[in-house]
Image 1 (cartoon, rainbow, N blue to C red):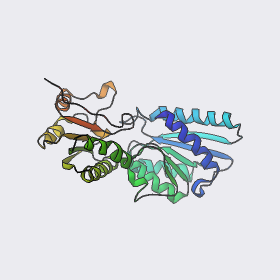
Image 2: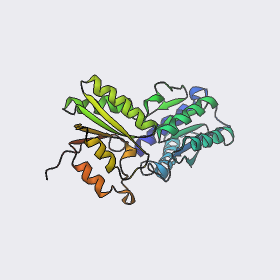
Image 3: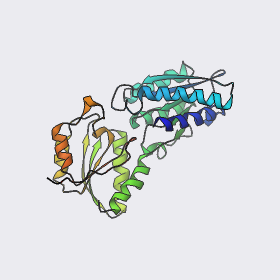
Image 4: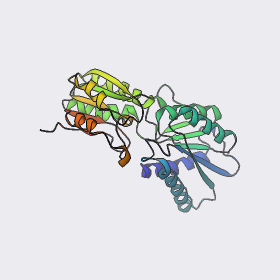
Length: 272
């Protein structure tokens, strides 16, 4: 993730200096804002690490090109809240001279930043929000969707799972923009490939114990349970799944997860 962010930032500096989407560089300084989750469910895949990666990328870019361009990196925590993210973005653009925002995990926040950036005539390079709406119904000339999205995940991994026999699905869907988009896009692919969606349940963001949701899904008899990142526990030791969640998950024929770190994987049924 951080290596990809480095590449995105390096390209972004060049685009910003060329005036991407009519964005105006403030003074003689390119100011880049890393906006992400610093302490919540997505801190491990971004957070302070992404800020450090951005600063390293700037240093590498300046050294490699021997450019006289002045670049400053600032950062903030959007707390996975669209209103908080929008407020930070407006302040950055209006008062702090920020020319471009990058990263922004959490699709609901990403969609909000997409709109503010278009309104302000600045630039937004998205490496964290995966909703395909950013290049679909909410497409903006000011936004570059650099990395993965829900359309790609659905048409790549989702279709492959169906072709390999996983033709009945039940979704445990994170209840925010990303989860909704992933369920929508994958459902369309499953049906188009001849499979069936037997149901879904919405799971609150950052849920740690989802055993009750798995039990709801179990009654559907689906071969595949589709999980989204916010419905799966973090890798941090303080956020391990409950024993009930682990037992329920191990009993499932297969689980499909889609997230920035694992993209997709299967949980085969284990013999007793």
